[in-house]
Length: 237
Ligand code: 1GP
Image (cartoon, rainbow, N blue to C red):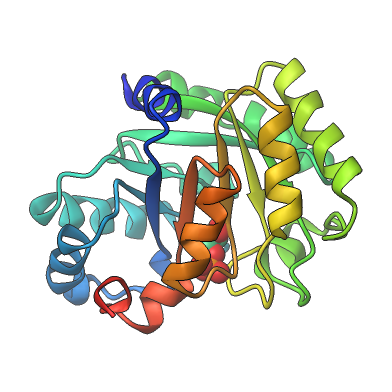
């Protein structure tokens, strides 16, 4: 149970972390061996597993297959208790703080207790904040919540800070997978400067130079999903 401690240590040393998101909906188990090789050659430090409409059984087998080829820590971030897999190393236990849907604030969490209590997963309490990325993404559709405007830095900051005061261990600024626009640099910078817990930024990040910029303005972990899905050589381009 040291994934979180390692994230905090990396933040202290200003060494940046990179998570590759694998969406079980879009990944065929037969591709895992070659995909894992590409991940091993990339600068990735973590693998995130998440999707909007996946079943646990398929997540289990996907993770077992990844673990055959890749030793990076695997964190799931499920949208529903049925997506929790004990095969992962940890779980980003997300509360969707930008929304006002009680299911994503507390209800799914209550329904996860029995599963989590019987698991070995490292549970990392995460404040999940959805930011408008210029198009409707699956998170928005599934959670039926309104994202925070990309220009409303004050609201994003206050939401993140309230999350920190509530005891969240991480804040995740999310534009949504496949977002047209990533979370603005101004917002990342302001939020990261004003919270003391590690900051994850993901959604709509499409180039290596953008990853660098987002790190430079204060993100501790950047998440890359679609760009790597579309081009497994993304990190060697
Ligand atoms: C989704 O932030 C991640 O949770 C990744 O988004 O697929 O747009 O890279 P992309």
